[in-house]
Length: 325
Image (cartoon, rainbow, N blue to C red; front, side, top):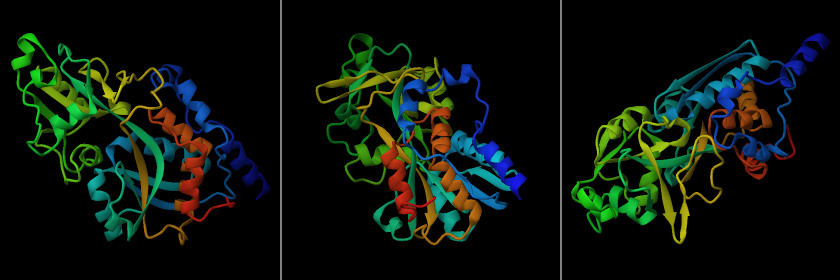
């Protein structure tokens, strides 16, 4: 037993996954973001765990989920964890039917959903907007983006001239590109732009962000939204966002994200019930790993923003772990 525990400790204190320096340099503000991990508690397992665990949910969290699984399995090699990407909007149905043990969502729960499920913030995603590479528009205000994507016709932007383009571009109609209603990013932007409505204005739907950017790169009239972590560089042009008197430059995958950038959404692990009565050892270990320095380091590796120490502790508090683990 002593030798097994020593082996476990060695696994904890080595990097959970090998990441090449080439990959690290493509992560948004990698060096700067590691400062966020200061004070975040390390993952310290008490004993090896086994069993099976099924994760399912948001495609935005796909890479992050696999990093978590690889990190946890390097410490608990007998654990069997599967990851299934289905979209945020199908998570609760799988949890309800017992077909998933934990869900991953890129939007917050509604008030009615919160009565049956617990959403633990685990990382953050930067939401960006893209246009055709030749489009002269380099930035739009939040109000202008709302005039494009809100479902109402009030103050609706119809042409690129309505958004400040001049010359031949001014007469071009605006064509919206987006994700399906299974995607959490669509629900998030509906909250931001739709004034309480359930959805955004109709758009050409894409199965993924790469497809969306490729379509816009072929369509001079197009505009769409992407996750920075999954943005394919050099396909479509990312634009900046004006928020009041402040202009936020277009985020870059190789630079720190502006701390005041206005469109940053929480990513969640969702559990059925309140999560405080969990008796599943492997699920408990996964959550402990996710809400640790190692798990938040994986968020950085996945091109996302990690939680700050106080945010990690708040998620741990939701599980009743105050002063524990």
